[in-house]
Length: 315
Image (cartoon, rainbow, N blue to C red):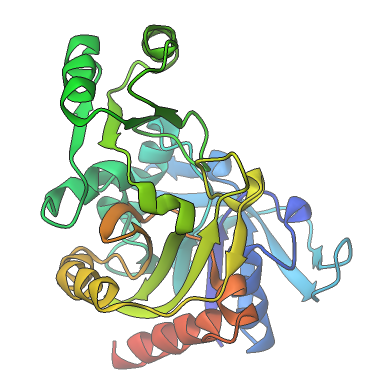
């Protein structure tokens, strides 16, 4: 039996038929492992001790509203865990970075997934720029003049916050869009960090493919189709999931980035592919495992715990 701590958002609010973290926890629970959950805000670095105010999962079931019963809160010494799974959603801000810095103190005695240093050093929309031959033309800046020049060169663009998530703040700007200046002004007021500017990829109308990699190998994929009139394919803004096969280009992308993920300790990763282009490498709390299984793909939560159990047996 493993002792597992999961750093996550409140379990009471999850959708048991969609949430990836819940699915991972349920699989671990069904295997007989001991599972504790806690929020990142309860982390404590006390001298050299890494603690969290946590609750033990007593029972679990795929029954919305009755999906988890929990113990009373207790102070948990994370050094006593075999595995700490980082699964809280962004925003990727200083609080997220500080939590990662604290969790680094557990290594190498505790297996922390994904590696907190790698999470800290590989923001999803910035990490992808290390593979420029796989990505669409991309600019990272908060210089309005540079954004204007990029638009003049590439005509139709996507503008989004560097540390955004879930499709929030994503704008498609057409060559004749009269709102361009207003959108840029809004970004100047709302986002002190740099922004991401990309050439618009028309193939997005056919879907935004989510591919999940485990230890550098592709283990499943789904396609997310934007709702009519939408550019974003995120499911919570109306995107629709459908079954999809990986193309030769998809496999080429995975083969290229896989070794870099393994080298960094990024074990569970979700990438986004539009047409022939890699657009994001999601390393914080990638989703999609339930959708992959629902459309006849692998049980990725089971594969994850197979990998963890095998890794700890070797150690």
